[in-house]
Image 1: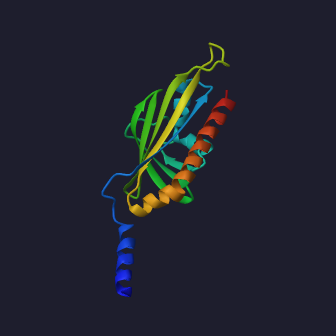
Image 2: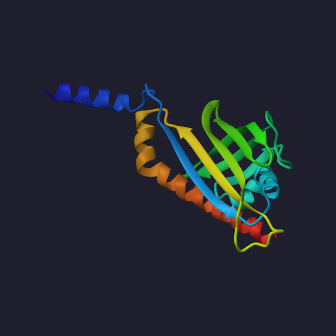
Length: 180
């Protein structure tokens, strides 16, 4: 009897590490209206050298960091996300200034997620007609590779990543509006 219980427990534990037979994607969406023109916001967020100044998870960037990156360009970022540190290589997959910018990440050869920035002109009653503002939307999506990751994501990771992403967009807005 004890042997059977141990076998069932061992199988249960092993299943936690088997690749999922379905796709489990997490999408984290944040947005803010920033009192700056879309082109200024686009240039700032798509220039990796600026990331550590507004995103709490970004510790540093290397490679092409001094300009708005174009499709195919890559940058390496050192990060801490939800308490986990690492290095991700981001590749720009879409750039449509000043509307959309998308990057896909890889960590040690494995897909690590996609970040998409969508920018649209925003109407802000407090601004004069000569001033412009931008609705900035940030979407981060990533997939769960195993059942263990699904469980950890639901219980621990996603809430922390959501909080870090919200803080990043809040900091971005504050930084860009202070630079006016």
